[in-house]
Length: 411
Image (cartoon, rainbow, N blue to C red; front, top):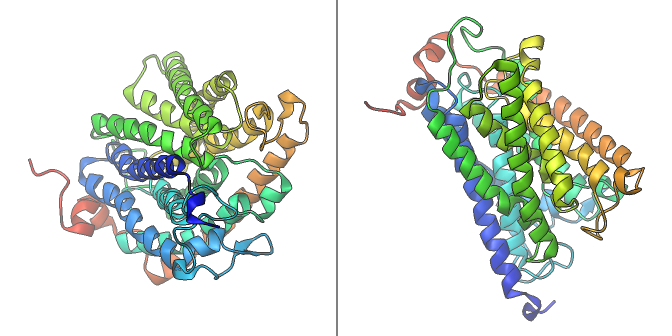
């Protein structure tokens, strides 16, 4: 394919979208950092920030090849593109065909970077930095890359089955949410959990992080169209209204149940709506997006209560927001998708496509099982090789000092 086939507008759009998605990982760092105690703020922020470095090296050496390279049995890509061999300035004949393949590679790298960072919220305030690094490398390799290939690679088995995931509800949120559940149960509760105060130390930081996530999510969802086209414009708009709807429904739910609206509820509700709309963003219209957001906000609010019922310590509510929100979003795609919005998609249940919702559920279940089983195995190996949880003394001191010999604040 000739270089002249590259569309300058699409290329510029996708570069901006990639930068927006990259900005989401520091936004996540602030979102998470504000919710922990002050003695752990720096360690929490660093875990998200360092994911940008770890995953980038994985991606350029073998990650992109395993995720999007020539297919092996619908399960994983081959090694044809290791060290980005053959991935250059020419457009791909399969992915985002009007931009340099290297730009598509960069855009997908930013997705891969934030996914393991999302998991860290489940075991915040109690893990070794060495354990975090080892887990991130192995989990990205054995869990993220195959699931990404299933759903988004041209010959991935879930894509061939007909499953829809426009921007990562299954690949990123549901996948990381299941891993977070397994990790939270595996590592155990924080020292003093249920007895001591674990109030967020800086809700202003969390709100700033939520705002950055919301801003970056426009690139996350609209950029998944692969070009500056009508589908991208629709995805951009429904991203905003779904987040707005979920924020309102979450706050109303907690106002009714708890008696007062909270800033943390507003921030969490907005993120829940963004998660829920992600798989459907390029396939649904504005009013469907509002319904997805309204339901998502309420579902995720009540899902947080499950950790008290089942007695696991998901420190920053990854399971409720990303696991539950991602699951609802995947199923909702099967309900509300419409070929009137995107002819390359399919019609959901409410538009005459009865089978799509069952395909979506099959994708959810497959991801649950694969991510859950593999994550447990990776945690067991991590515990043996590097150790995963800090000592009681280090946990009491705080991870900022015990793991990094630094403090988040010097007041």
